[in-house]
Length: 85
Image: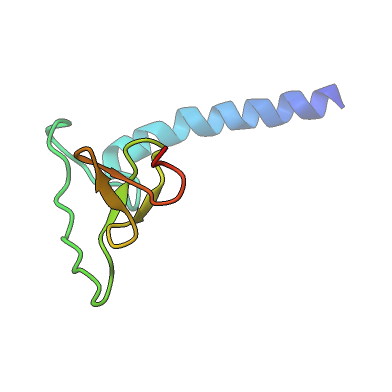
C-alpha cells in the first residue's frame, strides 16, 4: 500500500515538473495573459434588467432590501420593521 502511495506521489511530482514549462510556453486555456498585473481585464458592462429594483444595504443590520421597501432615518437607509428601534 505504501509503495502505491509513493508511486502516485512520484507520478504527480513528475507531472508538475514536466507540465510547468508547457504551461508557461503555450499558456493555460481560458486564462488571460496580462503584461501589467495592476490593470484588470475589460469586462463588458451588463445591461440593467427591465423592471428590476435598485437594492441597498441597511445601515444598521446590513441586510439588502429594495429601496422601495426601506426608508431613510436620520440620513441613513434602514429596514422598516426591525431597525427603527
